[in-house]
Image 1: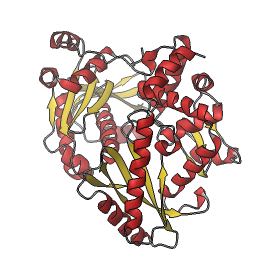
Image 2: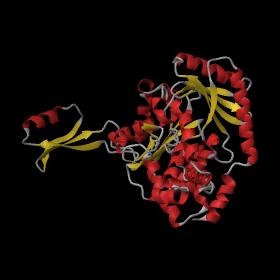
Image 3: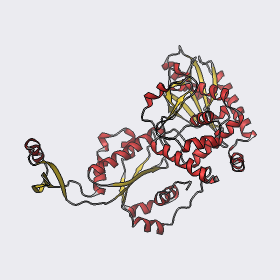
Image 4: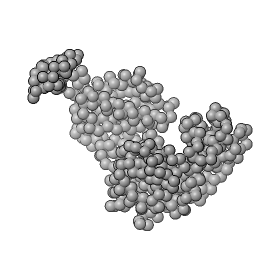
Length: 453
């Protein structure tokens, strides 16, 4: 055990007594407000990592669940929940957010607070809505976890933050804090957890108490399956992408070889100067799309749409015979950049296509009947019909431009807004955008290293 290193990290990430008292005082204040508001709610439950004592220093989040009897109709639950939330944040900054039903979240005296209406149920798997199981997470973790293990959870959270693999939102596609609490419960401590993670294989399964192997069948294909101990039909790691799963394993292996503070607190690397970036770009063929992040779409919903669109363009370029060697996207939730690294930015007009065996009369006729501009052929090579045809799209920049135009009819409202003023950038244009947070991201992209390397 790296006791000295862990003590140093824990000193930085453990909330102070003052913070804990502030959280408790704020909860009590909001709780009193809510219970004075007219309605059929029975009580307020403080949930999340701050309620369980596994949160990190300066994580000022309070997840408050307003509990209603399960006989309350969904429309009434929604109506009363929104009324309570708006009342709590009167005079403060707030917004409407969505889980299975809308709720209010906002800033209350420096705390990010969510006011979520929820049903009172007997067991997590009896839920009427997705949020109903959350209070059971609280009870489970509090009943099972020792004070020492809470410290291990903090180490695990900071480790995952440090390697960029924390957060089940669609921006990060990684693990929620609850998953890390369960990992520590399952593997007992931080060191053992890291050791086990370093040996994970695709389809890794973590089960608790009465969960059965058959519960995992419905999640076949997921890189990691953590069956929720309060709901056997839920995989707590459902948001985890294959890339993030592999990143966690690789980081764990690297940490075991050389345990350093940078895994928890990576160095903030200075952006390269423009001269060096320009020099690096001479070795690559890059195109980018610059777009706007929609203001009226919830970020978590928008990140999912952005990722899907990145894949769509990537697939379209490949279908048009452009070889994409690397692609990524970046956003500060104001601007969006989709970046594509290609083998070539232009293609020959002529494209060779190989058909069926010349002796295959039926398929040969179908092959030759297809509408396309034939430049030469047919001729026979190694027994098969061969044609040279004219490509419709030979310029990658123009191909992307044309594809963006289809967004007006083929995409969601969020992407239509996002791409309304979109521009396709060449390398010289990217250099003009090279500043601030984007410059740091683009330096990391060009360097091509994990932040813990």
